[in-house]
Image (cartoon, rainbow, N blue to C red; front, side, top):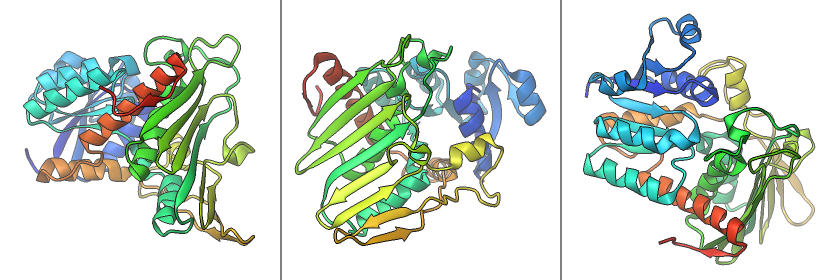
Length: 348
């Protein structure tokens, strides 16, 4: 592999257009050279040097080192498998797959071919998560007994799109659940068990739009909540994070700003990029409240670290075994909701 990595992006919908293309282009060691999309005119106007081609041509191109899969969720595993068979390194947008066996099959393929495979858990580089992680690691709340993470959006009307149509891979748990699970596991590791309620609450909704999942740890519970029925914390809803321990609590009310910034056209390196004006509240348990500045979000670090890993053989930004663990919890929650019982881990 040369000193720069040639990247092909499959999919130019919300994920590919808003997140992957700008963040890949911000990485010093990556060159985005090809995109598979039906929006060829839009790509040509924005990125005239990037070729648009079909999936077969992209996978057959020997000059492309890394394939990024940013297509609808049900196609993630099949396209990733085709890319691995073509000898490419692969990034898969979340969810990794629709089932744990699919994810494990991809893991086996990557290891057998000595290829690098990972999942785009970009929310590890959000300002809100980085702020909460730092506060926990500093011991501000002491021993954590209750961790609560919300990813809520107020969309009371069902929209005509694949994420809400009831097809395989649709629904809020496959859409937002992987972010919530990955962050919790990054902090606390694999839980002992999972219990979940995942349902469709909006009139006419064909896919789940409300998920309440509890990860069971020894002496601690992590509550993960995703909803299309409630405003976010900065709009009067539940805080993004609430963490309680034997020394106090920390609250982070608003969501990281990077998604909104990317949609608005801001890019890594621009003035204000990743800056989060919403502070962390530290409640010391005696009535005192201290406001701590939020960390700066840095989602560009995902592809920067990926590029370094591919060039040096070093650690990936999201190790494959951690991506598999997230998929295991996603599946355990679905099983718990379906069977109305607590599901113990690990899954067979």
